[in-house]
Length: 111
Length: 113
Image (cartoon, rainbow over the protein chains, first blue to last red):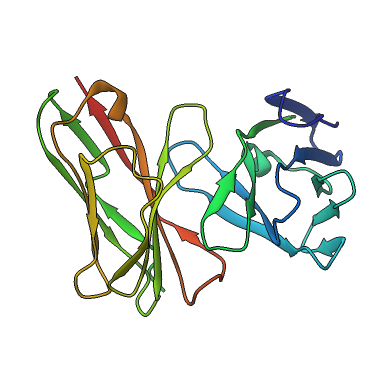
């Protein structure tokens, strides 16, 4: 399944499928990007980050892709599991220290 | 090791009351951040400390909001004369050094009635 930007707040996928969550960021001067997972009643949990001098970074079952030309960031989750159900936020940092978050995408994994 | 902890986890205040929210960062972390998260939204930056110095408070919505970190570890976010629009989850995050990854606490859910 795939979402476009953050205008579609909910993404539903079947267990075992790959998920793609997209994010359009706002500032071409941003030098650092990060994806967080937030489960209900909990704080955001770090998933993966990428600096602006890279275009791809892989973690365990997750990959982040950065396209600076169109200011687009995506999170790919391989073999999505029920435990992946959460709200996913992208965030950018524009040279300082504070993070600017998007509005989030709700990922629902169907059995 | 222990993560970022926040207390209380839930706070109900009557409009006009003052509240104080506490954050215990990960031991040794230099940087500390406060964010406000409205229902269904992403966190929004409030303020940032490096050790005891408050280096950025550009996100504090009004002069009713005040944060401190007097000894460079525990931080308190104080909201005076609470208003209904202050209802939100207040998140604290810390990082080992400037510009490192931020680790978040569970948040304090504030409800102003």
